[in-house]
Image 1 (tube, rainbow, N blue to C red):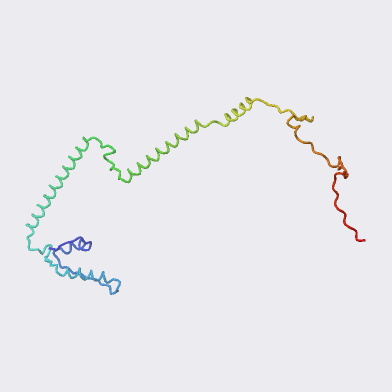
Image 2 (tube, rainbow, N blue to C red):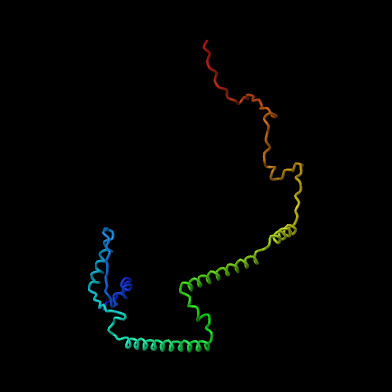
Length: 215
């Protein structure tokens, strides 16, 4: 027999390689250097195909089997196939009847479980929603504690009214009398009003010696 491997070409030729007829395989090669790998694989496949041995036999009316015997064999095969079809049909009816008595499946049973990636995304969405809710609570608390602008103006006006009103008297133009502390301060003297006193020599004064005359 032929050892069929996981090859698309081998499975395509499976019917011809296993049949009872003559077999011819033609291998096409490409002389280009870029197709060297493909040409080499084709030659290896053709070399393995040469080892295949088939047994061609004549088919149809010219067979050595008598016609009555062949007819009986075909009738037997037909009856066998008919029994198999009847058994399978009865089995299908039994399964359909059993399926009617079963309760309808729930959504969780019909749908496949979510993949781990969806679970991670759902957890992330839940965390973000929780953070958003906390932020909204903080904003609401801040708004409730913050005073309104009108209340600030009212408090300022009330403070102004509560402060005592003080008046400053205008400065008097009269000259204030000097206090005893100011009496010790000397009064400035004008040199224009009082002329310098004239100095006269007295008897007790010493006069400088007179220089001798030259004549």
